[in-house]
Length: 87
Image 1: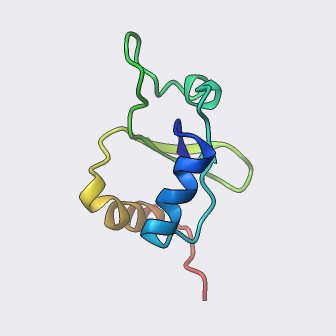
Image 2 (image 1 turned 90 degrees about the vertical axis):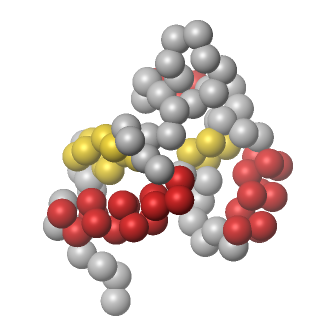
């Protein structure tokens, strides 16, 4: 996960939500800009999900992420892309 929030804010978010995955802190928005998720004229990043294969290539970009169903959507897309579940 990547966020344009500070490391401190991301750490608090992870602790509050019990996140067990890394979160990139990108307060200078360099990564967000490189991935094209900062629309012109906006200060905040769009909520997109990038599915990146083991070879580093982007397999799919979901530009219609809904926060309340993101987990289910990610699981469904990973299955569609043939990503195996961890045992």
